[in-house]
Image 1 (cartoon, rainbow, N blue to C red):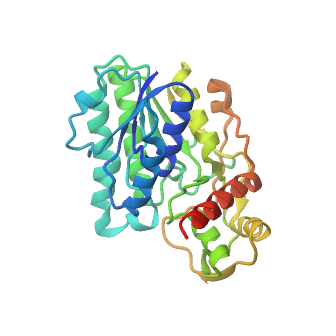
Image 2 (tube, helix red, strand yellow):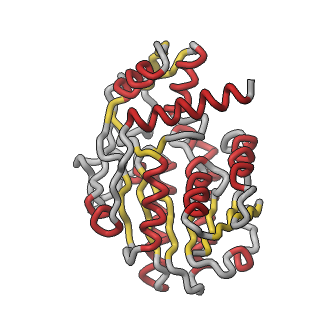
Amino acid sequence: MRAVVTGAAGFIGSHLCAHLLASGDTVVGIDALTDSYDPALKARNLRLLAPHPAFTHHRADLLDADLGTLLDGAEVVYHLAGQPGVRPSWGTDFARYADRNLLATQTLVEAARRRPLRKFLYASSSSVYGDAPVFPTPETVCPRPVSPYGVTKLAAEHVCELYRTAHGLPTVSLRLFTVYGPRQRPDMAFARLIDAALTGGPFPLYGDGEQTRDFTYVGDVVTAMRAAACAGFTGVANLGGGRPVSMKQAVTTVEQLIGPVILHARPGGPGEARHTGADIALAAREFGYRPRTDLYDGLTAMVKHTMTWRHLNG
């Protein structure tokens, strides 16, 4: 298939591009290389993709790009671009989240709606659920985000659903639960945890450590994205790891792989759900989703990649 991937230089986006290319697809990557985290890391991800003859990258902002040209000939659009992070989404930074998560999505679906797409896939977030009343959480639970980030992700998801029902755009919104793996964003918990274990520096543990997350390995996520694009399913579906664990358990696993971690206890911040856990029955039924990577194996791959990168770069 000919695929367009927004956010192609990011953590999940670069893994998705590599998976699509390995599957024989042609990939047009779009990424503005914003400063949401170090653009040099995004450029590094692009260098891994650049040698493939079926990959091209366009540095462009979705809000002012010539989307008609970029979408020309596309069969599937994977929309992963956006402003990440729960904690920074409060206050004056909210405008950036609204622009990059909501307005950019509306601009893209508007450009896509008259095209004969096989699928428009949007990377949503488990943050839309907030403090869910049921675990594991099915898609039928009413979303009640507890962060401005979650609000923008849910609003963009609603935009996709509107264009699906009003204009027939075949959209799928996948609610991703705490994705981790090699090349994870440096601000995310596991990247910071592994760095602390390797350097001996402190790891800030927010809250009491008993909060749980449904950690989902990036390889399982990108495999599911392509499967959803190829299936007949449209609508909203969860993608989780299938086995929520506490942050204390995650710390213990990293200590088993590397060594002791110095914990720096900090109070939990606003907007962070106490527990998350995905009911993945719908994704399993509609496009065969089966998370295959457990936390130990996923963290092992992440640690190996980090240590290799450190060795190659002094």
